[in-house]
Image 1 (cartoon, rainbow, N blue to C red):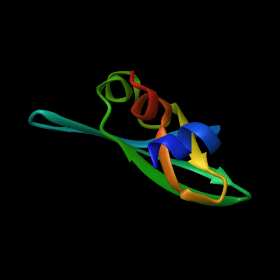
Image 2 (cartoon, rainbow, N blue to C red):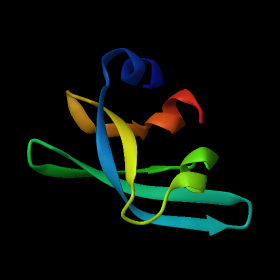
Image 3 (tube, rainbow, N blue to C red):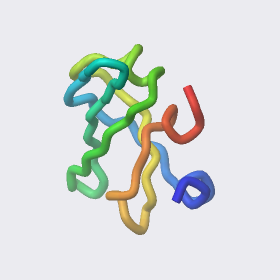
Image 4 (cartoon, rainbow, N blue to C red):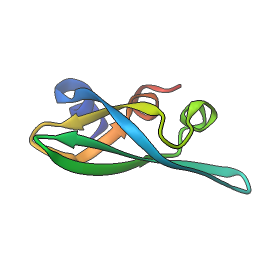
Length: 79
């Protein structure tokens, strides 16, 4: 799926819903809109965690054929 996201994905700005850290792992939850529908995703990428706060923007790449398939930009390409 990563190669398909890189080849066909569309980038949008999403909104961070939450930032959590538990022991040695971190997670950023986000949402974004496509055609007035809200889609959600999450990132475990450390760079997303370090620069994200609830309500901040995050770059998201999704498949136009199925926006449920998505990743943060940094998660897909490395932070």
